[in-house]
Image (cartoon, rainbow, N blue to C red; front, top):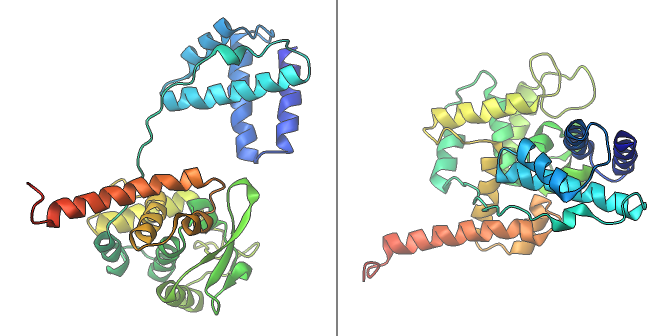
Length: 284
């Protein structure tokens, strides 16, 4: 019975959520079914047992609890449960980790160095574009050439939830993209990917991660520098430069302003550090 309920729920979610989200729900609920032997024994005690067994961290527990809440809410709405057992469960306290951002000097060191990879024009174009537009890794590798407008310096990408947005970039990213497209882009074997590999296939996210790490390490940057670091740096540097939060939200493609507000904390911390280092009475 429980497996049938789960299947009904996932089919409903498939029409509302992104495929990767539905897969995560399916994985969580499959573990629940295994623990309960397929029986609808959805009591607070059994759900706590599930969370203790399958949650390795507060973050994982919070995600799995969110899955349980959505599932049980659905069961109550469809009158398969009289009460929602998750109402008695408490969410773990999660400390928000401030995103790491590179300094302007670090970004310059990374982008202006002698290319350390065998595709210097492509890789520089990728890095310039990601930093200039605040792109996610998936948005970067998923970009198509036909959605690029070099004259207007815009690119339309598909973000989370399959939502399109148009991002902006500057003259340095434009120059890097023009050089790559003229001299180094391998014609695609299928589709219209902006960034291709040696075989003409769309560049993958794993290759992108390796690319970023290679350039970062070669420039002497922290070893945990990632594609998301460039996105964090983009947002932080905009706020440092005086951009308003709403504009940054739109550029990043965040649905909620609250998601973008974490960058204000990063920006404020950087300002505090600048004051502490430069103010003549900082030790007073």
